[in-house]
Length: 322
Ligand SMILES: *[C@@H]1O[C@H](CO)[C@@H](O)[C@H](O)[C@H]1NC(C)=O
Ligand SMILES: *[C@@H]1O[C@H](CO)[C@@H](O)[C@H](O)[C@H]1NC(C)=O
Ligand SMILES: *[C@@H]1O[C@H](CO)[C@@H](O)[C@H](O)[C@H]1NC(C)=O
Ligand SMILES: *[C@@H]1O[C@H](CO)[C@@H](O)[C@H](O)[C@H]1NC(C)=O
Ligand SMILES: *[C@@H]1O[C@H](CO)[C@@H](O)[C@H](O)[C@H]1NC(C)=O
Image (cartoon, rainbow, N blue to C red; front, side):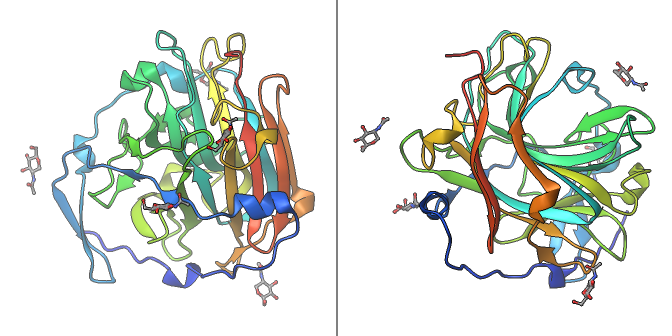
């Protein structure tokens, strides 16, 4: 199957580094090196982009049917920033990577990243998201791995990576589910990932773009969705835990340290921007954002601010693992 997909390069605006307000946020902006992930899956299909670049990609028919219980029906505890906007066409953020502790014999997970959704009031939403998670029951280890995930609201169906048809992977150098390395060290070097999700105004598909180099990893076809067909109305950045014992015996989020510890000790998400109706990365509006946590004794949010570079916050905590 040959396919051509256009990527709107116009979207990829560079942004200015401007003077910041607080000392706190100045330190969040210190440079940090990027974390990378490795080739993980076999690929054997080739797609030519309009730009002329050729990417190998996975044959959709090879994607196994698999439905992991982790993804369904469990209450989520969130620390991070919630955002409501009637017209959202994507978001970009920089997230530092830690390996939060999750009990090895549990089916719990701890994830950090971003997602966009849209759905009926009180009903099942369409959601797309990307980020890292530690999930021993899924991967058999405690490493931070890069994942994409989505919910199809009308079908009440949740999937991640290539475990069921949906996400179309384009670039072979990025293995979904691959381990991220290196990861940040508490009170030491910080490593980040940069993720951009945006809706291509021509094809209406939702693209996932990796890194400062803006490498397309793949896309969610708009036909997967009902409520996300045209736009998103809600976004979240930060971390969450979920799973059978995630609320009673919570795993860590981020570094496992509270947000108030600040740069190099707490997890952060920074340079958050929204893609607006003009297909441009713009600053989020502060009245639409809500930074918080469902359980302040376990996880916190601190240093929340919006400035010219976008929105920033520290987040995370030890959960019930003191
Ligand atoms: C990034 O990595 C280089 C080379 O290892 C190192 O010299 C530099 O200090 C690192 N920067 C940060 C902010 O960690
Ligand atoms: C892709 O892999 C499948 C399964 O191994 C094989 O049947 C098919 O011929 C391969 N296609 C190409 C283009 O290599
Ligand atoms: C959606 O699926 C979950 C898990 O399979 C189930 O617990 C829940 O009741 C379903 N919701 C609806 C509205 O069907
Ligand atoms: C952080 O590192 C500095 C410099 O190595 C050290 O002086 C300090 O005690 C460390 N703090 C913590 C909380 O580990
Ligand atoms: C697009 O940009 C124009 C000109 O700056 C502005 O007037 C308009 O409100 C923008 N539309 C959206 C949907 O943001």
